[in-house]
Length: 364
Image (spheres, helix red, strand yellow):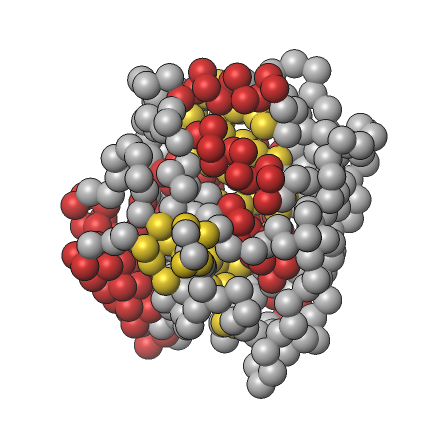
């Protein structure tokens, strides 16, 4: 997998998905291309035994990508390798904030039993969507770069009125591993991630990571997700598998999250425990193979949509236990509309899938 190409001028990218067809409209892409960086050096996680054979489609996608013919810069010499213990949990006092560092990853039904061969990961791009996160963006960027020094960061800002974009620009000016994608306005989490995915793929990144700006996703746990991705197509940081947990959540929020995942898992007939999780690491080939241009969902539903598409396409999905921490600064973007959208979309997908199976139709 090649590293990112050097661009001489800011690019214009089409970032916004049409609400119904997933088509994109013009957005400002005020970013420069990334320099070459190495891969995380963690040891790959061993797969669990007793899994079924992968589909032929998944077998084909699990192979390494060809090296694109692009000119790359020399590797960074000032970025040190991840320090020993970089994947250790961040603590508050004497109590660790993450469980599961020694817990086996949970494999989906697409488990390859260790027989598939995966290509190298390539450079990691951590995509952090922002809207009014001026207080949070600097700390989270610093923690990501400390935890995975070879990673690059793309801040996808939806023209935040609180000046988040300006703060991100200042961080980018100080560190060439940080890029900023300035978008025209608030269009939702799904649209921001899709714009970041496209930008990352266009610029040669091999791994695309979803991460919240508010600190609920701990960057210190990212090395474990990247290690697991060496033997998978998609890794989900899961709250609802053994070793995963949440901190400072009200019972009502936990009920919605657990209920939403259970509801989705049963209706869509998938083995994933945390369908709504937003801490994820994708291989580039996985995103290219799930039909991103057809995705029009947002919020909770966006995460469910991508996970279900990956399972249907035969990709191998692993859940790694993480600790989710409720934000301390800023306001949550969760709303009743987001939950309602997820409920009816999942219902329609589940019913449609069952009807197709009864009638012997191929899944769209």
